[in-house]
Length: 307
Image 1 (cartoon, rainbow, N blue to C red):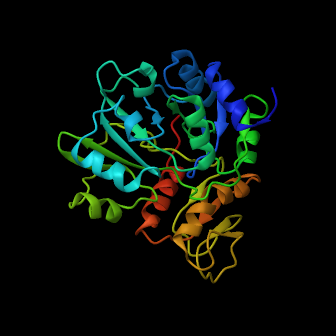
Image 2: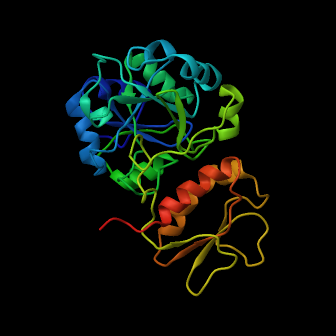
């Protein structure tokens, strides 16, 4: 199996029930035919992903989404405002939806997203059916934002479509729309303020129950210990900076304190620091706008790993 492949090759792999890694505007995804139970099971096996953790169904458009989820009211308004793009909506699962049961992890809901990346959309259109595509990395590890990250993670186990660096760099915002409640299940580049501007009311916090991907306490984690909100590094720590720093950082997410630039660099820089042993310290990131998503990923990356 060749490590790199073309979009046409990717379509052929999907049709054959095989896995392929591909770019989206958020992170690289490990894609499989959502209707093929064996292919979806291979995602869980390859990633080492817990089977209670559901997957996001990637669709071309709202018309395709309506075959799988119950789309109405606020869900329709959010799709109209942000699709295609980095927003995932969790809605009630439609009866007899043509999707493998592993996709929903036994829940009566389904997570839907229409990616904006041109390569992902090219593959979706040519394939003709939705695919699932969680991040193309081992479960709980740092998400991949370049093809080289996927190659390092899986070697020749999974073919990869190289679409260049992912422009956003953090996973999609996930919003739950259930029983007339609108909840923020995972922050991302579509901010709570963006969503409130469409639905006219603030988002509710999530429950502790896992309803969508990215809700596990420990996630996105490097191998080395991670300390947050560090003004300066302690002994043997490498500092991941933000903005103007008194102590020179090993890497700086954004010297100009640009949250969009910081999000795009986050996983790439964490991977670089994790390539050598030793603890990592991270400078404070403003917890507003896109900073909410960055801090969410960092808190999960720093959380104690399950034994």
